Amino acid sequence: MSASAPADVFKTYKEQKIPCPHRDAEPEVNMEYWDKMLGGAYEEKEAVLRIKTDMSNDDPALRDWVAFRILKREHPRVGARYIVWPTLDFESAIEDHMLGITHILRGKDLMKSEKRQRFIYDYFGWRYPVTALWGKIKVLEFGKFSTSELRRGIERGEYDGWDDPRLPTVRALRRRGFQPEAIRRFFIAMGISQNDISVSMKNLYAENRKLVDPHAMRYFFVRRPVLMELRNGDSFTAMALKHPSGTDYREIRTGNRVYISGDDYARLREGQRIRLKYLCTVVVESRKPLVADIKEEKKEDFIIHWAPDNGIRVRVKKPDGMDDEGIGEPLIASERGKVVQFERYGFVRIDSVYRDLVIAYFTH
Image 1 (cartoon, rainbow, N blue to C red):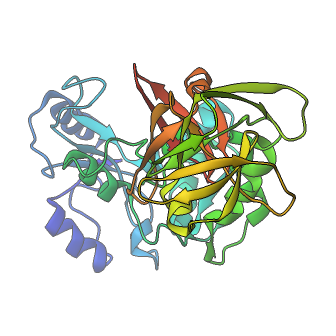
Image 2: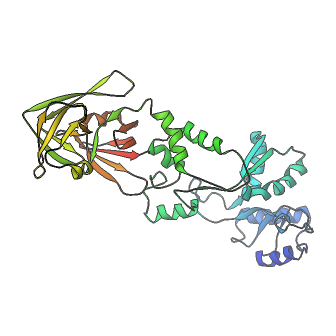
Image 3: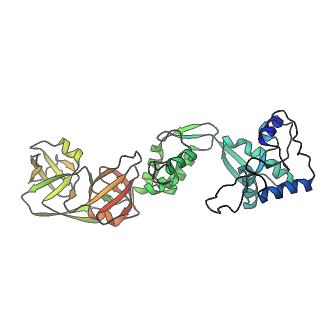
């Protein structure tokens, strides 16, 4: 190991396969350089510590590569305690050996890491782990992204944090209600190949749906709610299944007014028969104001969902940034931290509950 010449000078040496003048310095001299680095005598880029390899190697990336460098910056965990830091290839090589790592899965863009790290393993007589490389994975719905660019977006206030539903991060997926096993199955299904591939989030949705659907309770939520008055009655109680495969019911009480979604309202016409699911059948008497008369149920009735007049406000945060707001059943507030299904809408995770507002994250 040796301290190097300035970066621009060493770059010329490296390209021309010429040894740096410091390369053959005595160990005692190198230790003096090392102590000065640790003591803060050098500024950033004025000195580095390199692994002595073979300057005649055909690959410039393997010629005396950098193992330690100087970074005089505040670290998020240890502050300014250290100013000399190992590079990724050096640090991970030592750490993998200390942890007893036997197999490494890494992107093919890090193919040269193994070649660099083998200099360390060979020197100490260690056995290098079995390595498998895989190609780049492009998620169609997110396009090209990088953690550094995402970080800058968070710092600029464009995102709420690493768990913002618009981001392709594990934290965001967890907050949206994706199960760890679904993510595991998603990646295992892709296999390990050095070919670059493109995948759709729909594959992950399918895996997650298999896991959450059997357990997700069903609830009514209406977007862009429109108030409907029900004639021929003062109050109503609906007994709705908590899950279509079960026998447990939830009770939904309402007065003689209910909310329907703006999408359903746009399709209504006067004289139309509709079935308010689990509640009653009505015929639309007028659209402005929206008034309906209660009638007997028929098999051909058009079935829609609804929310009671004592419902709770719900805001669904979506990955496209276009949040949905509406009214939902009061019992939704009891499902905090769980994934539920809003009927005719999709799966959501109930994230937080305030006095009169539920915040949910759209899953799929």
